[in-house]
Length: 112
Length: 113
Image (cartoon, rainbow over all chains, first blue to last red):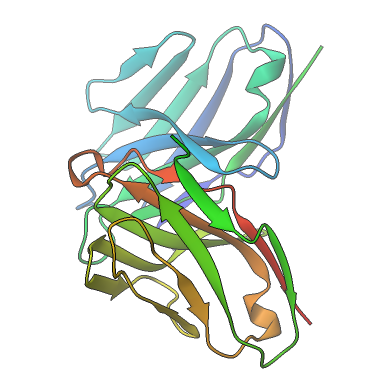
C-alpha cells in the first residue's frame, strides 16, 4: 500500500462548483498533514495545514479523520484560477520531521 | 529576496556523464532537501540536510551525492547519469520550526539519453 494515496482525477468542474478531494495515508503514527498546490510545470506551494479539528481558509476547508487515516480538501465556489494539481502531504519520513511524503496529486480543471 | 534558486533550468546529459545541480536559498533556512518528480510517481525525497555539515539520505538516494558546506547552498551531484534519472528535480528549504512550509525552487528538468 502506498504511503499517501489520492485519486489522480482529473476533476473537471464548472466555475462556481464545489469539489472535494480525498486522501488516505498508511502510517498511523503520522502527526502532521498538509495540502500543497502545484500549477502546471511549476513548483509546489503550501496551500494549508490540516488540523484534527478541521480548518478553513476562505473557500478552502481541510478535514482530518485520524481513525480512518483520511484527509480531505473542499473547495467552494471554484474559480478558474483554482485549476492545478493538489498534493496531499504527510510528514514523518526518516530522521527529520521536515521529510515530507507527497501523494501523487489530484488534478483539478475548472471550466468557464 | 530571491527565495530558492536552482540552476540550470534545463539540462541534457549522456549516459555516464556527471553533473551538479545547484540550489541556493537566501532565507537562512536550516532545512534543505532535494526531490525528484516523475510522471505518475509524485515527489520523492532524495537527500536532505538539517544544517551546514549535516546531510542524510531520503527515499531514493542511489546515484546522487550532496554536501552542505554553507547554510545557503545545497548542491546535488549526479555521479554517473543514467536514463532512469531523467526527471524534474526540485530543491526545497524551510526553517526547522516551520518545517511544513517548504519553499521550492523552480526545478531543473533533466534528460539523460
